[in-house]
Length: 213
Ligand SMILES: C[S@@+](CC[C@H](N)C(=O)[O-])C[C@H]1O[C@@H](n2cnc3c(N)ncnc32)[C@H](O)[C@@H]1O
Image 1 (cartoon, rainbow, N blue to C red):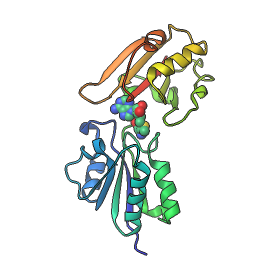
Image 2 (image 1 turned 90 degrees about the vertical axis):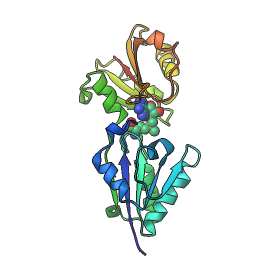
Image 3 (image 1 turned 45 degrees about the horizontal axis):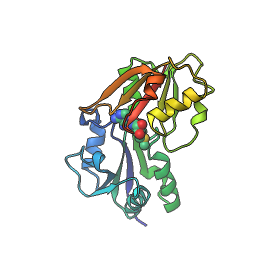
Image 4 (image 1 turned 30 degrees about the vertical axis):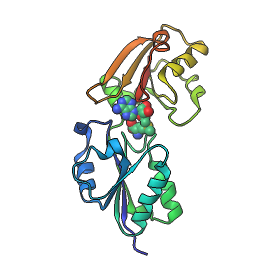
């Protein structure tokens, strides 16, 4: 059976200036590129596009892996870095099921929204609590670390205001300082610093990183 190759590519937080040259060059030479519409729009030279949305994500990833099993070179685009709440594990699982050998899978890292949020706030992130709640309901995992003296950088699972309310409901001081980094790298990037109480009363889009000091 002929096998092609899969590249799982991090595209950074969203703006094209954060794309790596490696990502651009790899997409250019791929037979197929699978990604969300906004990810695909970042690239000028795509041979065959396969767009996904939240509903058909799994089917489109399976289609991409199958194309690689059939001998094609396939790029799969992931926002930020594929290994941080990205598509990495899902693509690895599908590839295993379909029998695509590990040697035919290459991960190309990207700049995570977490890294950009840490950079914007001058946080050395090896000394922060890094937590992702995206697509999970493990929000209580934040409680044992929230008071350990380190900044907590969280990718919220629900609305930012709901996450703030959860912390208030669990006895966290309403005056705790919080920074919300919304739509990082886009022209309408919005970085707000306020108390936990104020954040619980504010509206943000889903595209946010929350930092709790
Ligand atoms: C499926 S996760 C992907 C995370 C991605 N792999 C990364 O490394 O940034 C999507 C979540 O990441 C965060 N995110 C992604 N891009 C962002 C951006 N430009 N600004 C703020 N948050 C972002 C948001 O919390 C969003 O809901």
